[in-house]
Image (cartoon, rainbow, N blue to C red; front, top):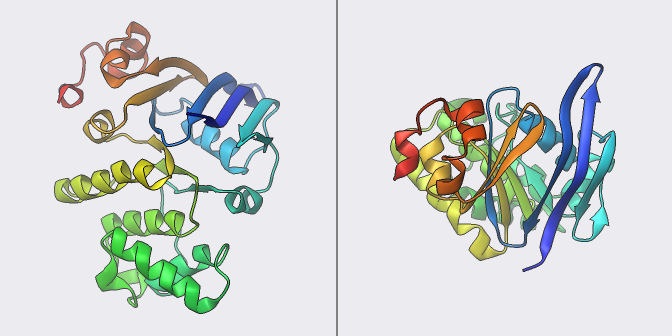
Length: 245
């Protein structure tokens, strides 16, 4: 496989705070990679760097052979990187399908094609019965699904999922996990930040762990949960029971 994304010595500081320091890793085409770490570890900052919301102070972010560090978010989206947000930010004055159409329009050639694409992804995430509904009727869990739909409507090559399981019921977690797991088989590479550990540990074959802005572990879930640095920084003194399934 060929690396689709490379982070090469990436760092950024906010005043005296070193938010991300010398982070280096690569993600192969078709991988599903989990990204975990305690609150304040730098996960959101790393996503903002990859998505173009922040420019790194040092290092390179290489996507498909091109250094994209410093590109604007809409340029990053156009070349194939989509993301979701921890707190959904839909356009509440629009319907569900209109929200997704806005994403689809970045690549589709007409309004009708954008609506077709929006309808496709709404079906994929289980929101087909809400196509023409106002966003205001959606529960927290359904808003998370809408975030996923908006990202997939961009036809991304790489998608950055940010805590998409928060607020979902166990049955919803199962359904969305299955959707995420299916994406690499459809040519979509995934990096996934998640605090619902059993979902990410049982789905991703590789886990990256950040702590205090530094990458402290990179490996299979079974290896990562036994890493002393990870146990100390994030998982506590005991291994999480959910991660053993």
